[in-house]
Image 1 (tube, rainbow, N blue to C red):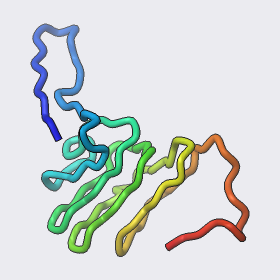
Image 2: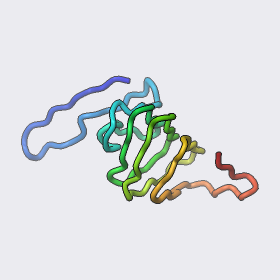
Image 3: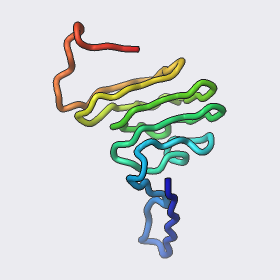
Length: 119
């Protein structure tokens, strides 16, 4: 992963100092902290919270990729909503994976109970 830093001056200029490049769509948290502080903005990436790190959701987030909590990693929904987006299937892995409120915003119909699976 490549990390860039952007510097802004003046009162009218603002933005994020982080960017994600397409070299890898899997992003690993590099520290504990708030979601927006430990993961760069990415439209469709897979997010991994490694062993020893705790990530808090603040604010509500939209997730278009997969989400994995490795053994020894953790996250705190902190009373915020996670919305699963995009038209691809998504995988949520970890033990435990507990959300405050998990919502779906998908263009495709939700599979019938006979074809849906949780694991």
